[in-house]
Amino acid sequence: MTKIAASEKRHGRPKLGQHFLVDSAATTRIVEALGDISESTVLEIGPGRGALTSTLARRARRLIAVEIDRVLAAQLRMNFSQEPNVEIIEGDVLAIDFHTLFGPKPGSTRPGLNHQPEAVRVVGNLPYFITSDILLRLFEFRQYFETIVLMVQREVAERLAAAPGRSDYGLLSATAQLYARVEKLFTLPPSAFSPPPKVESSVVRLRMVSKLESLAVPEAEFIAFLKLAFGQKRKTLANNLKAQYAPRALRAAFEEAGVKPTVRAEALSLDKTAALFRALRAGGLSS
Ligand code: SAM
Image 1 (cartoon, rainbow, N blue to C red):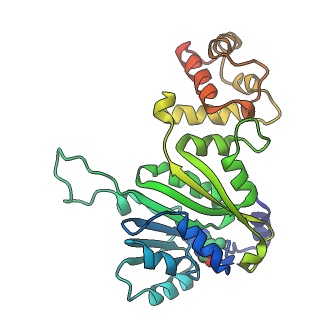
Image 2: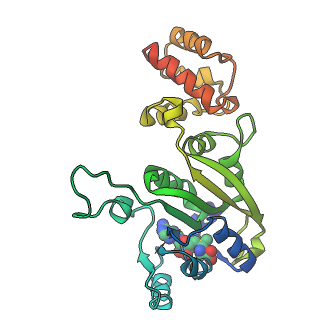
Image 3: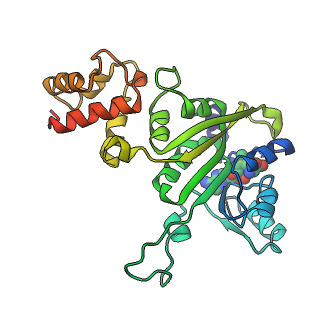
């Protein structure tokens, strides 16, 4: 749990991670990190008081902003009531069904015609305590998303973008890098927000390009394998995998994939991790 999450839990009612951006230069940089949005639908997560929303509304073809706070959502609705390209949804981004929002509408497709999903760009200065949940949700519906630009806690940005072998590379890095090319763009101090958070913040950009096909791995099984591989940080990869695979199968698969048996999951590239997974799968059998 992040420091912010812990402090919010202590104060009883969750505060929804409300730290509003007050640095207008940063606002512009964040919106520009989305690229040319004049022909795009943009999804904004947690628009709050609208720091990013106004710029987005001016530039995007269509803007959908999801805000959980009833009062803020009502204010945003009022402020943008004259903008036909802006839709404010009062709701929890973790509960939004993106198939309904961005998928084919009933009657909009004829049988036999392939529906091309919308290429939506996503942006948000996130409530940090649910960053991982939001990322997982976006990955779940990734068919709709092209580019994602998010403000997150600096440490989380570093983990998302870390290369294998770095101390901050872990399950979050491997999962994000399975679905996207991740770049850490820039860092902001607490003073860029009101009220200031207790931590530094960084903006990351994820360009959604799935590696599932090139790695030749089935999604659900490979994600379960990654969770097992990164299970206990102190253990070697082989020791983590022992929970599910027989020693003989492990020895053979490590050899076939060209992976040293003493390695930790954190040190292995996604390519090598996938090679090991494929070797274990081909050799059959878990214990
Ligand atoms: N975008 C604004 C800005 O940059 O000033 C506000 C950012 S603030 C860090 C996070 C925003 O997310 C708050 O407005 C908060 O109410 C909203 N929020 C928190 N949890 C949410 C959820 N589950 N779904 C949608 N919005 C949420």
